[in-house]
Image (tube, rainbow, N blue to C red; front, side, top):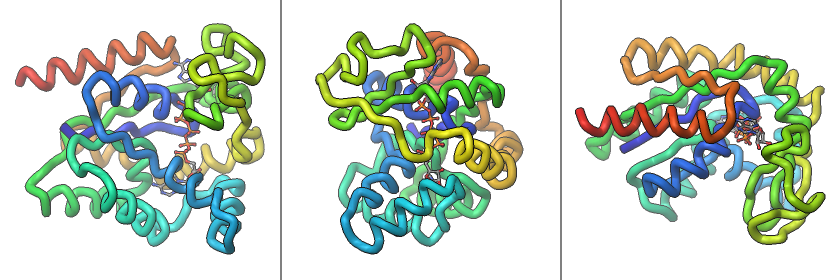
Length: 219
Ligand code: AP5
């Protein structure tokens, strides 16, 4: 089973990926996470990546495939749960070729649909755990950490991403509209797109995703 989570910034891709990964034993790959790992390097490449991510613009396809292919060499290549990839038609076509080479295919593309104003609220309130990567939100009561700035799960310190501000959000959102949103029609035409209204609690969104997957698995 191969799944794509397609959505604008802060729609809940990472949040749902964490839940789906553990329920269905999927190989969760977030290109954003891979890029943030590269950005933590103390060399010229790391600095270049930090600047790129802060700008909010999409990273070049060349860098994406370099980082992604390197990661794929190190992990199981089945049951992919792709979070934030592909981000444009070119990346989608390359992915299709990669899967075809392994006699594999995509099963579900979930489009997490959330209004822009809600995204802005989510992005400015997001806090991440430095240690285990869990996401919290100080703007949303049900997602606040129990103790300020401390992760409930591992007691790691919570931090705010450098690109989680309104200015960067506007650029990321525009990049999404200009380059990524075309994938909605692309996958609709292939009849594997499922639109999930995601302006709901994370549990409700998760239930809907599971419902579609369970139904699809019975076919
Ligand atoms: P990436 O890390 O993928 O960033 P993004 O797409 O902007 O998505 P986010 O990580 O911001 O949000 P999310 O949808 O995962 O939401 P989350 O679950 O955290 O990419 C970063 C950058 O890398 C990009 O800007 C680009 O430059 C580059 N990049 C990455 N992939 C690329 C590619 N393929 N090609 C080119 N460039 C690429 O949730 C957000 C917040 O909301 C959290 O606080 C969470 O707790 C909360 N929340 C989640 N669900 C709910 C809910 N149902 N109700 C209330 N709050 C919720």
